Length: 179
Image (cartoon, rainbow, N blue to C red; front, side, top):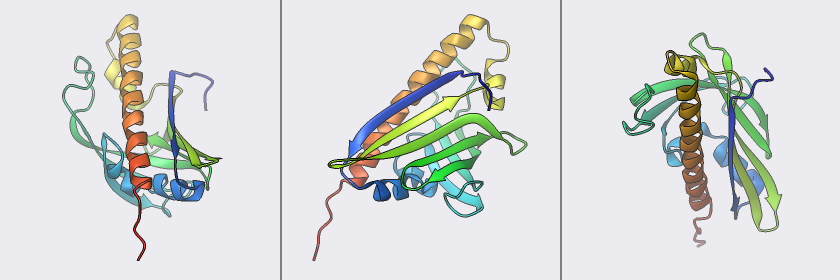
């Protein structure tokens, strides 16, 4: 990992569920369509689910109005990510892979901490060096345009994180009936 930090985004919420339950849910990326505004799900393509080194192929969809002025992927596309840390029930991190299958400095994570009434769930994204895709998007942009794009992209990610956390919280706090 480099010492460069392009940006970092984070959001958190309280969830009325124990850390093991929260961790089991968020580390199952095959369920990501239930919570992500962009990821429509996918499948584990190598390794054991949620184990370090395992690869998940995600199916994503982005609407045309997302940072509409920039040449970002729109419609449906797939990405590969690799689990880079899995420490149940505390930390789950995955990095986006480049076209050669190498983990990039584009790392998503969920961190779970115990709280009196359940758990504190933090969703984070960190980008060190620009990824292969971000270099393509920003190629030909002026320095000011790159900064504007990165600021707008960080805002978009933060909004997606808030939606993700709200959906996870709603799913995990649904009352169950006992017979």
